[in-house]
Image (cartoon, rainbow, N blue to C red; front, side, top):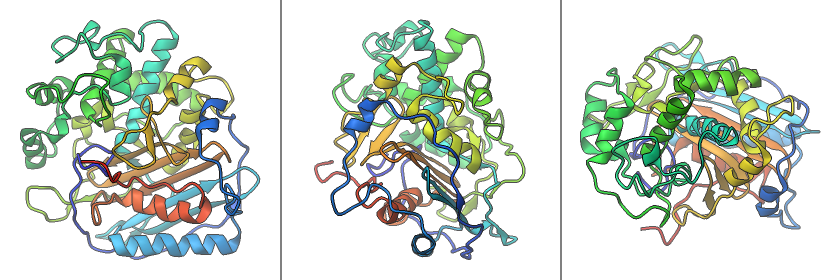
Length: 417
């Protein structure tokens, strides 16, 4: 995986046909604030400089600046369609859809569309694991070999090291044979065991805990742990214990390649021929616990504060305070500048959450705890522009305007290999 891509697959520098820019909806009042973040992460977040407010007031003038910035990124990076939402307690909200959801018909992008959310699935899988930690069914420092046989270094690698991407296991989605199998037949289903086989034929890259290396293999294993210890399919557990209590009725763990209606078409450029392809109905089983889920704009607005605070919207705990504190401990990755990665969650200059990328789609669901600001970005392409993810370009442009003291940027560190 390229250093700049914390997502599912290796990024490829490609360009897609431009979509028509459209601004929609209006600036409106923000809803009530979610539960506060535990003080530990808030204290670790960078403080705003005296010349930069923590978050700028979302006036009509600022909204126009955001419109122009998003439009500029979309033209530059040839993003067909995007939806952006910003919410800060006590301020107007910003909700806009730009461009098209379907290039063949010209149907406009709107906020009510289902989209594949890629690696945003990881925080859901890790949340399920952390709930099992709270129930004393598993321990974060248990070796994965206690739950899954045949894992290289399985007697040494802990569940914690899988969740914080420091296991040393090879990323199956970077295996050339896997890439050929997926791109030659994107509708084919994969089992978790098949995915692990692509990884396990490679030697471990380093001893567990030595350094950070983003690997989808890690989250596939955690999904199997959840299934083993609950006796439920991963998607069923997530629905019952995370989605239903949160009222997230438009988020699901698919079992095939269908996506609910209405949805945005997703556009990608596979490595087999380099021509743009509609990947809407590619089977996401190849990403499973690491990236198969589907959601919409409204549900991700609910989710972004939940995963950072560890609380459901009604204030009850989703994950215990002690376990959530461990989740939010995010040591530097030393690969991406200004980024720390905890247990299925990252902190980029104070913005905390995760991104997601699956062929045809990109997602950002972020929360800035110092101001309780939520940022959600959805785009219907995963095609990189000058080695940068579309979601990174959009997130960076937006946060430069609204939180100049906290800029979301997944740029590689200068010292990265």
